[in-house]
Length: 584
Image 1: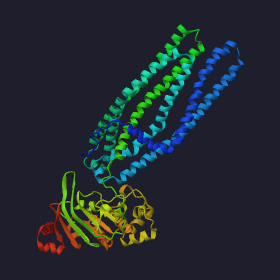
Image 2 (image 1 turned 45 degrees about the horizontal axis):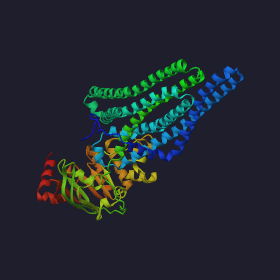
Image 3 (image 1 turned 60 degrees about the horizontal axis):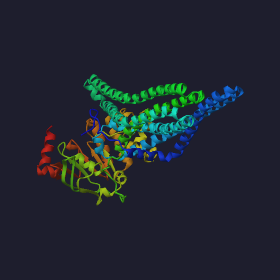
Image 4 (image 1 turned 180 degrees about the vertical axis):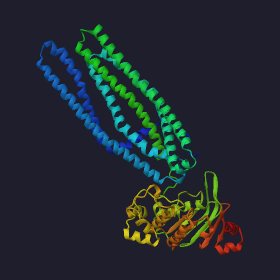
């Protein structure tokens, strides 16, 4: 079932394995992590020295009236504060660099995976949700693991240091703060799965909104044509309200942790002063009581951040689950370790091929031979499997049974870049990128502009290109919307000629084009198909009747095969199909 904006994704369970896996992306930068943690530790120790200095001043300096020492102690405290701030700044710089590097690495891994995932993945997934996983989640994970994870480690270290300082001064007063802190930590751990579950729901609601926005942008013309603006606004509002409600539940649990830490902070500090001053003074000095109360505050400050940070780490686990779910998607179209690279001539053969989507067969025991340089037309009713035949040749899908060979070699034994590098496809609606005309024509090849222009002149598209604002340097709008349909198709034909493939696939390449432009396209196609193995699917049979061979696909097989004249003489299915179109 297609996962769209109306349904949440499958729920996943928390796995520590995901936390271990993310370390793989952090390990190349462990030196930066170590430096950041070291700087933070030194910074924390400098701050923790201040209550000790204050206690010394109250208990020793003021009673002895050594007021000259106060200036020295104030200077030492100022140095501690400034040095701590400087080290914190250096730590932040290290983490900022680390954040960008980890986010980049994650996005590259995800993007590379997306480039090799089969068409079936994109057929069954909302593109908006894919964008969310590829762009938003890596940034969130990088922030959390660069800042939050380091901060959690530092919070724990800070708690240990504070506990040591406190216990060294007075064990009993220290336990008033330490025991509640341990209880609260256990409470945070117990409710963290609930926080993760709620955040996972919130993520799904946000992804649903993104999916709807992506779908709405892609279908904006349909929306405007059928006056669905108000309806779509209502849907977006409903999706956003669901997201807000889910986020509220997540924040409620997070704020509960934060609030409890604040309450415990005030209560334990007051209790330390009360017990210390009523029951322990003067055995325990006022300076020591004040220092322990100050340290108690420094226990609860990290505790508040710790509760928030642990919550965010659980959030990160929900992002990681979706990221690794994508990265773990089976490639399906996998390349063998010993895959071959060879010079392809263009002899293609389907041998007893079975193929279907899900459990429904589209091709069954399909057999077809195509010779090098032969031009073959595929015809048949809608849904007969013509386009499927074309997709199988490029291994966008793999056959269930049988095999497809090129020059006698099973296409599964070839490297994908070898196979697809020798095949070019031209569809009814080809995609042109938002780059310059020149970049769209050459793609990754290094070809001089004059050579490109020579081909474009041959196809009678050079004049159109040169009429654009910057000629071949003109940046095309979204899918070349600043060009007509015919001009876009001519650009795609030029791109094919520049790529110079051995096999050419044309799927309804001249559909939805006016007759005048179609004649121009047909002339260009005559040039581009010359001396190439060519497979053509066309709605109008008149456009393929001059092919070397015409194949009619019906009942999941090659139903009829031959030249136009041969098939017309048979007066079979092809004859009736052609006759009906001629009458129309």
